[in-house]
Length: 439
Image (spheres, rainbow, N blue to C red):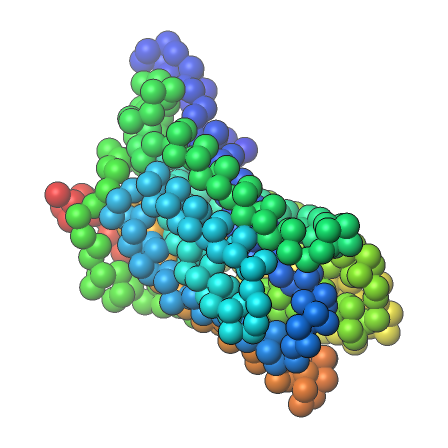
């Protein structure tokens, strides 16, 4: 964890508690569950496709259905977190999506599976914006890049362990069982979150005055649980937000190629069997987990040492996108499956090193409205993520498997150019101005 400030509260002679770190741990667990639930279908695709006789294009639209629901309801999800507070909002939506994760196993046709996946995506849509809001009044500014890095590392760790788990469960019990298991896991998390989390540090019985003062002195404003209205006009007029959102479109399109299709690619194009597929599909996501942690940590350390948060955020993200672009090309052209996987590990590491930085910026520029700001960013990103699965299927039919990956490499270059224009110090609201908007 980056330096959090003074260890001892000299005014009271008491060490601050660390409830904010427990909150961070619960948020990491939530991110893990989101990705376990969304990528389990990718490993089940070969078996589902065989059982139902679905074409590649049909599978593509099933995968896309989740992402369209996820993209369309980003802003309503972020608004919900800002309106009723993260404690209730996150418990509600995790319960919703866990039900529809399990419902996927009950699908009897392409149409029913599309419906269940869309409703699942609708629930998951609020996860990252609300989770971002849940941390905005708990984490210190110098912990934000690390916090966003480790939460997203949790999501990628969940995604990394899922292919192997799904394959083992499928081989033993069939493809439906993993969906029931992951759905129950989400319901358990929702219960724990509602019991432990509070919308502000002051509301939490386990937080002492020293930790409250530490958070207050670092953020410079007394935390509030909810707001009456979201000032959308001021948010949507931010040029930084729109540059951030376009960058995230490029990122989400690219990472979706690996989350949705890489197991199928290894099974079909690289001719790996199910067990090999499960193992090798996990490796790039493990590399991505490391990338998430390194990117957020490095950005925070740079900002602490230099005092220049704009350069710290920008440099790490630009470097990550360029590493990804330069690695995707040899991964695509590699003659062996193993060589392809190792280059892909480097590519996904680079891609994921940008994520903690990207999600720290809504906290940097959005303040109390970080949930809504991040919802706009994630909406645009996941429009790219929704286009990606369907477009890939058509590109494979027309041009083969290489072209979709080369498109992703081009988008990584575009994302690097866009991030070079993002200024993390260009706040949408000053803290004073944000307070004036509250009741």
